[in-house]
Image 1: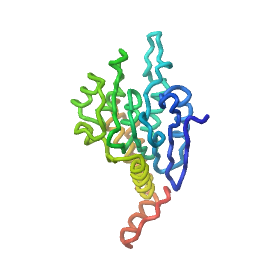
Image 2: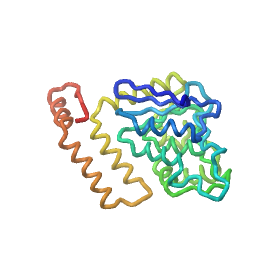
Image 3: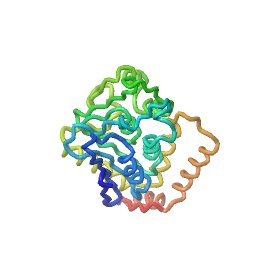
Image 4: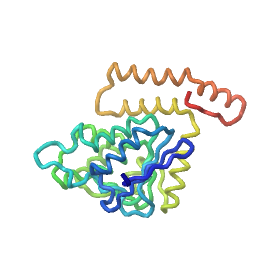
Length: 257
């Protein structure tokens, strides 16, 4: 333990990667802490970040963990893919607060988050072509949900970084800020705003967006799951509270029930 810090405050969980010795490379040790921090979160919004002032948000897949026996480093069972699926499957929005470089698998992780807030000079690069690694369809689909096909092609084919304030990422990075302090303030303000709204509604909408942008087709079972989430929101006390608050011109008090 000790490669991350976790702070819970009023419905917002902040998970900070602190393994600067390895530039927050997504090795087994770090992933063993990150995964339960996401999967076990009881919150309405989660911020995933590095320590303030870093030059590297995460160096991506730890090169020491890459297999050399011909097996797929990005197979369904890989720890990195477990974390990416946990972020996408979380029942709450995950905000990537990015400062410094997000390289390789870390770029994939940031793009898998629901919202990206970044410092102006933060950089994103996807680098499998530099290592001879063929990427997988699910990861490509996640990129196509975050950037246009031409931008995704250029990122994969050149392995060159794009700055957070570049025109190519204008529709990908939700908010661009100038400093570490602003990154903290902006991401926390966004998370608190999300936490103040109806969590069952947000959970259902996130699931629908993911289902419509997944590489896999929407099956009958997944459609039923989405319908159940929507039905739970429609019949919740939060729905009635939202209507009452609107009519009474007051702020709603959502409980997730």
